[in-house]
Image (cartoon, rainbow over all chains, first blue to last red; front, side, top):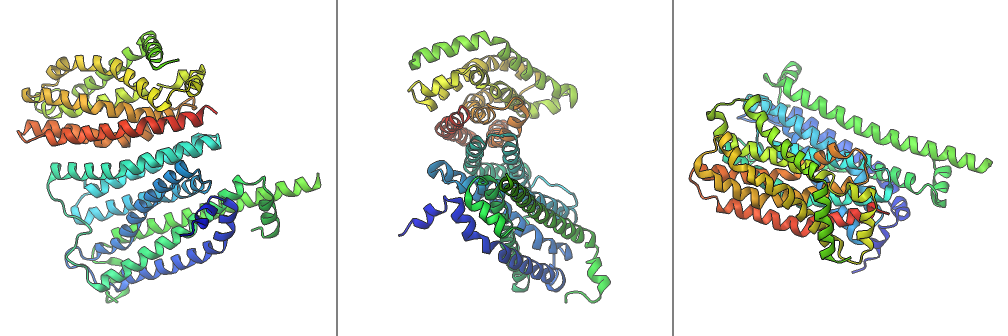
Length: 248
Length: 58
Length: 220
C-alpha cells in the first residue's frame, strides 16, 4: 500500500489546496439533504403509534447525537495521530472540530430534554444516554477551555492532543459506567432509539438528515481548518499568494 | 402528507410546541455555527490581506 | 540525581509544605460537614448517602491537593532539571504522584472511622468503603496529575483543572459508591472492586506518560 498520501496530510499546504474545492459542495449537499430529511420527517413521515407527533424530534436528535459522538471519536484519534506522528494537521483539526462537537452535544441535550417532556413527563431524566451526552458536552467544553487558555501554540497543540486522547480512552469507561449506574438506579427506562423495527417511511428521512448533517459538518470543519491553516502559516509564501490572488 | 390541514401541521396533535421548539433551536444553532465559521474565515483573510499589503508598501 | 535522591527530596518538600496538605484535609472535612448542615442531619438521609458524601468530598480534596502539584517545581525550574536528569520522566512523575498520594491520602484514611460514625454509615459497609477508597484513590491522583500537568504553565489553573478532570472522575465515583451500595444490599461487590482496580491499572500505565508529554512541552 502506498502511504504517500498519509504523509502528505502532515503538510498543511498540501491539505489546504487539496481540501479547498471540497468545503462548499459538501456544505451545500449537506444542507440540501438535511432540509429534505427534515421536511420529509416533519410533514410526510407517519406519526408514531405510541408517541404521536413528538416522535418527529428523532430527525434532529439522533443525527445530532451521532455527530456529537463521532466528532469526539475523531478528536481522540487525531490527538493520537499527533502524539505518534507529530502530524501538523491534527491539532488544526482538533481546534476546528471541538466547537462544532460542543454545539452538537448541546443540541442533543436540548432536543433530548424537550423530547423528554411529552414522553416521560419531565424535562430531565437521569437516563444513561442523556447523562453520557451531558458528560460529553463537559469534555468538549474542557478541550475548548484548555485551547483558549494556553497561548503558546506548541504547548496548546500538545496539551489538547493529550486531553483528547485521554478523553477517547475514558469515553467507553464513562459510557459503560453511566449505563451501569443507570440500571442500578431506576431499572429499565424507556429507551428512545430501540423501537419496534422502524418502518421504511420513518427510516428514510432519518437517513437523509443524518447523512446531510454529516456532510454539513464536514464542510464546516474544512472551512474552519482552512482558516486555521491560513492563520498559522501566515509567514509562508504560499499563504500570501493564496490570500492576495483568490481572497474572499 | 401526514397531516390533513396546515393548522394540524403546526399543532402536531398537542406536541407542536415541543417539536417546533426543537427544530427552531437546532436551526438557530446550525446557523450560528455556520455564521461564526464564515465570519472567522472572512476576518482572517481580511487581516492577512491588510498585513501583506502593508508589507509590500514598506 | 538518582531515583532515591529524588524521593528523598520529594518527601522533604512535602514535609515543608505540610500546611497545604493540612488544608486539603480540612477542606475534606468541611465538605463532609456541609451535607448534614445543608441537606439533612437525620440518620435516614445520611446513612444511605454516607458513601456518596465521602466520595464527593474525596474527589474535591484530591483535586485541590493535586492541582498545584507541579506548579512550584515549574516556577523554580526543577521540572527542567527532571527532564535533563537522564532519568525516565514518567517514572519520576509517578514517584511524585505516589508521594503525594501517601501524604494526602493516609491522613484521610485515618479520619474515616470518625466520619463513618458522624455520617451513620451502616456497620457492614465500613470496610467496603475503605477498600474502595484504597483502590480508587490512586486513580484520582494519577488522573489529577494529568490535569496538573496540563495547566502547569497557567497562573490561574484551578478552575480549569476542575472542568478538565471531573468528568474523568465520574467512573471511579460511580463504581466506588455502587460497590458500597451493593454491600449494603448484601449483593456481591467484588466485581466492582475489580473494575476499580482495572481503572487504577489503566491510569497507572497511561497517566504518567501523558503527564510527561505535557510537562516536556510546557518547559520549552
